[in-house]
Amino acid sequence: MDHISRTRHPARNRVIFLLSLRAGLRAKEIANLEWRMVTDAEGEVSETVRISDKASKGNSGGVVPMAAELRAALMALHRVSPLPFGPSKVVQTERACFTSAQVIINLFREWYSVLGFDGCSSHSGRRTFITMAARNIGRFGGSLRDVQALARHRSLAMTQRYIEVDSLAMKKVVDGW
Image (tube, rainbow, N blue to C red; front, side, top):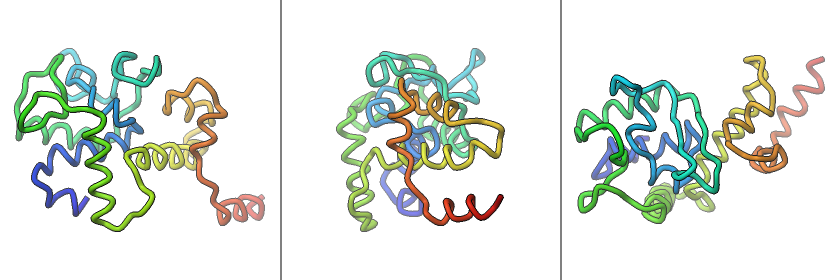
């Protein structure tokens, strides 16, 4: 986040990064996200991200609860670049009122490269989101099926492929009961 705060468009870039890390959105979904998908009927930033099937991969649209940090970033973005809420895109460039998934992919590649994070991509935030949700969902009475719904995957097997193994956690859980 420190690196992003020093970029040319810090408010926009913070939203892009948090949409990946804190909402688990894919590059295509970030590029296609419209203000109406993150606002309520009164035009205020909502407490959910409602991804349409059209904006998502295949027909994997759905609703993801919005983290407070992401909600604050969206409100800040709207303050610095006031655009009409509705069908206009959340992420825009200087030259266009929209962007592409490839531009989002390139931004992440550049950010991670500058920071020396080899092997990271625009999908890394999504993987982290799903892994962290899986590790914490039990604390809130949920299950892996809830994580599957957050990831908007059709199969639990696909969701499980995203979850990173943690050998220390495995040891703690075995020793803990």
